[in-house]
Length: 448
Image (cartoon, rainbow, N blue to C red; front, side, top):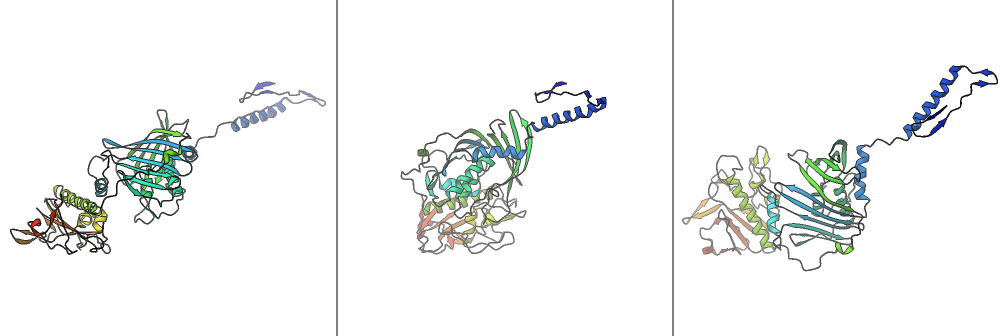
């Protein structure tokens, strides 16, 4: 008998019909052929391609980054009607160039971002750029052209973090969050940016999809629980290059999409691309500029509090109880957080009230200064109270910035009211009891 198996091999089967003892019963042939048929099936199954798993697919995506000798990537991330751009160069030997071209997003900014954009305005008048460069031996970070330092960050861990953030997600957050602190423990990438709940999704056009849960980077000493994002990655099934990723942070509405505009692996990137600029960099903001920006941030918070009725009392008024109330005031059990937490902690005279979250510990100076709500103001030659008992005032407020330790942490005091004009003078470190009706007649100099 002659046949062709499913594997394409020609099989010859010779079945003897006679023996020295005579003819075999015809039924004896059936078990023999059945056994051969089962053998062919088993052989065919052993040659079949293994079924792809989501874990296997994800590992292939991750390895194109972790095993590459060099990476060049360009990633776009929309922010409302605008977009941010990330340009990356990575090369073995802990060499990294990470550039973030930032756009000011639509809508209101958080107090911290307002302060950062104001402090680090680009020196060339262009868009805000964050730039971190590691040449393999040292690292520097620049924001808006200002040198922020950063030489003590472990280069090996930063290199791995950028690589894994490209592979798994968090490229917009994790590298920047990492360089903002200097005492991280050694990163373990079984736990750092850990991936779980991998699932295969439906194909979309020529792209395959995977979804998973991503553990976001968290500084170990920060309070609060771990946070997670649900991620959907679209990738090329031939190269396993990611095409885009969509994030939805658990507990928050809306999603964020990052699109890979460019991804090139294993090209020969010259070391000169990772050279740290040695030209003179613009100096960081002076202490006085930092205090001005802090006062400006408080003034903007006061206007927002009044114009948008942030305390929901149906009255347009300012908060005059203290400074930290612009952060600690509770609305439906949640802090309103109108100012950066650093300024809330720098309130030299925080109010104790059940309407506010508790003030924790002693005041912590910001830029060497305490920021305090002035209690009185002068009108028609008479002193009047800002706060009549409700901790609010419909028309005015007064704020001062006073050195935390005069003269070691500063010599100049600053005052500002609802006009948002700042005045300065050396007051010997004494607090201002009453905002003068005519500051310049009382020794205060107007800041241009």
